[in-house]
Length: 351
Image (cartoon, rainbow, N blue to C red):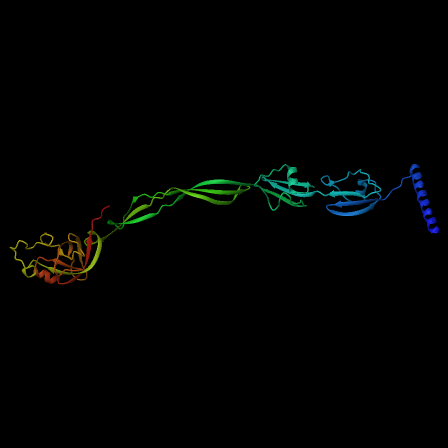
């Protein structure tokens, strides 16, 4: 135990001696470089370095660390490093950032931490609905970052839409098939539509229908079209007809055998409609061809046409699609016999 105590006393004597030697050397003008401990952090990467440099500037030169004018450093270059405690040196290198807004592009070097800080420093204001494309105000700034401001505006639009009118066709049985006329003009309907529109940087990105109101109903256009057809005879004469029937045609006279009347009878030669018989008077079935109808009888096959006629009489043997044609003499009636005819129902067109 005595030996160990003697050893401690000896060590203490050496420490005291070293202290007085150091003081003596300092007072004598001797320069002594003491080692310092520096914890340097560059862009969140830290390391601890033992250095003999006296100032921050000397330390940076020694470690070949470049600090640009836009970089941020927590200590001045001429700051003297401390001997007896750890020196903390923090450097944040400036990031290259592109900022696009309102049609402008700005390139900056910045040591700011967040996107919002960069915008604040540039004096770029953002409205409530504006967006930062792909980022948020709190996004961390990194080298090469592109900050694009998207100006968002919401507007309400009122638009007038015109609804097309329909066209209705109405048959006119007294007008030529080649004719058509408008009896009521059409008018477009009007609808007022409200939309919510979202625009980004002046361009429409969405358009949503909010409501529609019919201001005026469309008016249907009404057009008449004719159904009457025309036929040209070999003579060149043209007649207009509404219908045509294929029928069987017989012939009759006013002979006693057929009408059971003599020429002194008050009703001799008088038709059912009260018109005296003559060439062109025919008997019909009124359920098929109404009395008083003008027709044209065309012979199908052999023989001449009977021609223009008037449905003025009826007969017990005339029913359905049959007609009985008046002939002035018995021989002509017998010569006619029974023939196939085409009966055109005449109609005078009204324009």
